[in-house]
Picture (cartoon, one colour):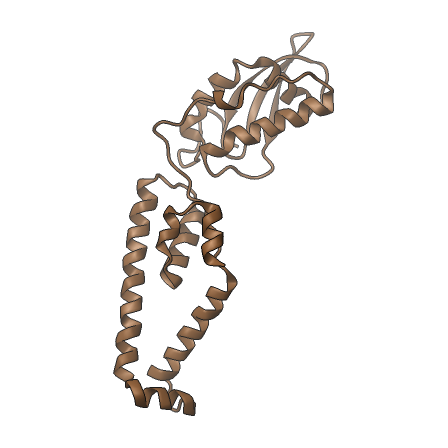
Length: 228
């Protein structure tokens, strides 16, 4: 996790760090709970958040003698978007309060500062494995029809009906359509401010191979339903 001075500009949480820190420090009891539990010390009397990014956050805690300690608290999983901050911090605060037997200090769920001019993370869902199997079959069949010097008899029979040129044009059209979809997907992800490299790779690779560009607009649960 980077410090405030050297915060990674590509981190999805970095653009909102100052706003989040200012907000969370208006709930000192919650921050103190983080420090005591995740810093493994019951001696802290006060604490404030000093930094946050997609990997975790830093709390500066002070004990009864005025001695300060910097507590580095890591998230279980790296955050990919601003929208994940509230549920993760809330769950961590709840875990700390239960472990320390403290009264709830959680702020209302809807009070985290809004994300008005922010990027939007577009989580990737793998299509049903059957689609990948069908894709392999599609590619292999067209390889036999177009390129194989001595394809099986059933392939020769299909070629005799439709002709080799038909399959060459059909395959070329599919490739062109997928390339257009990839270009459109790049534009869409860029316009949404997607910053997660793995998400870019997964979406572009998937769309290049199987299309399904409309998944970019489909809610996560709906994507699973359509791909099954």
